[in-house]
Picture 1 (cartoon, rainbow over the protein chains, first blue to last red):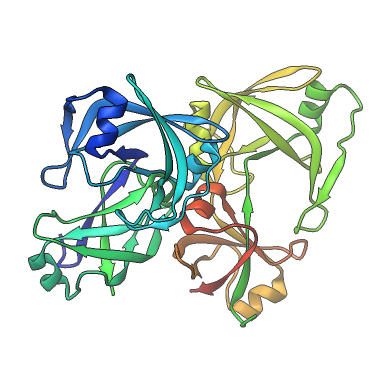
Picture 2 (picture 1 turned 60 degrees about the vertical axis):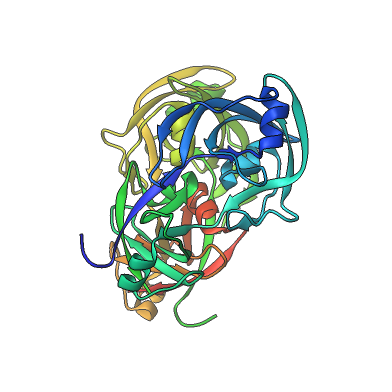
Length: 190
Length: 190
């Protein structure tokens, strides 16, 4: 890999649950089942699924664990159209005023007033990675991907934490548009 | 508009029919009904729809007229997944060995051995436009789109004919990935 190379991973639609919402949907004291470890340390895909319901349709989505402070549903623009919601493009965790939906689990339902977002494309990296790339937390960079449907992704936000591992995350619309299947490599351009 | 500005239009899934296939699906002597004129001179969206059936699902698609030499179905990668087909990324008209599907119309059905493609992103332009841009037919260029989800589209093929009007065509995955809704402008970069 060159100095500027970044792994690009595609995130399919998924949701993160708060402890309280997990209890409502799956029952008091329920614990999530790890199905697969993800590239970000400590993060995992769960065996459990939740039905996310919008005005026009419903989609079953995987839960990513562990639980978080607030419940958040990450969809592509295509998924949003299926559901009939109009979520904003946001960074993870920034859900104030985002789109509403209903969650249906085996033990209960929740009407969420907000929580649905389209994740803004981003790169997770450690402090050491950021130094090597010459960037800092919150910087907006471009990541160039070559291929028969190659694109350069502008507006990619850098997120720095020593709890991260180096990886860019895009959604399924972005992967389809760029002809990306599986994990590929891009080049960070400032 | 700057010298290098190009209108970007989004093409949703659609199909073109040959005279023979139109007759099979809609009946002998049937004539397509113009619903809306398109940006390309003489091209129009039709009132008629055809059901396109794949191994995993079916989608109703609009016909674009007039009829052509060969029937061709243009889908996004997302649509292809819904149908359960794996079409190649191709220029319009290049359908040899492309994906199969079944077409269902009000008067008949057709099992197509090939015809389903994902359209390669492209720019239609006249000879005069090509001269002004300093490009020629079949050139591969980049088109830069600015916005909150901006991207630079590499691998954009230039198609020159005096029967065209200046416009870039992308599919719905590409529009969603770039946060494009309605017609927008991009800048041609060589």
